[in-house]
Image 1 (cartoon, rainbow, N blue to C red):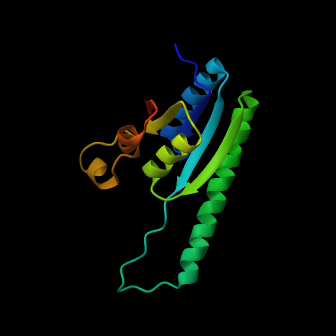
Image 2 (cartoon, rainbow, N blue to C red):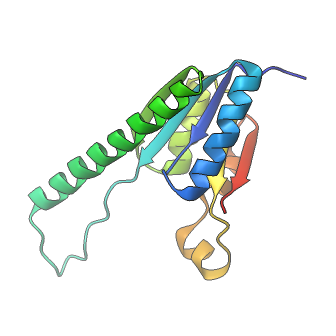
Length: 148
C-alpha cells in the first residue's frame, strides 16, 4: 500500500471537523506524514442594496473573522503538535471547495480528509456540500468522516 507523505485536513472548526481531524492525525502518525490544516474564509455576503451599512462595517467584520479563524487554527496546530505530528496551518479566502482542492494540488497532498455534516433535503440544497464538491474536483483521494 502506498504511504501518504502529506495529508490535508480541511476544517471549519465544527464538530464534524473535529472527528475528521482525529482521523487525519491517526493517518499522519501511521504514515509519518506531514499534516496540512486548511481553513477557508468565505467572503462576507453584502446585504440587499435597499439597506445601508457602512463599508467600514464589512472591513471590520472581515478582520474579526480572520482573527477568530487564526486563533482557532493556532489552537489546532498546537493540539496536533502535542500529538507529535508535523503540522502546518493554512488560511485561505474564497470558495471553500475550490480553495481546498487547489491547496491539495499546490501542496502535493496525497490525501484529503474532510468532515461531513450529514445534511439532507432542503438544508443540503440551500447550504450545498463542500465535501461533495471536493470529492468531485480533487485529483487525490478524499476521505470523508461523518460528524456525530
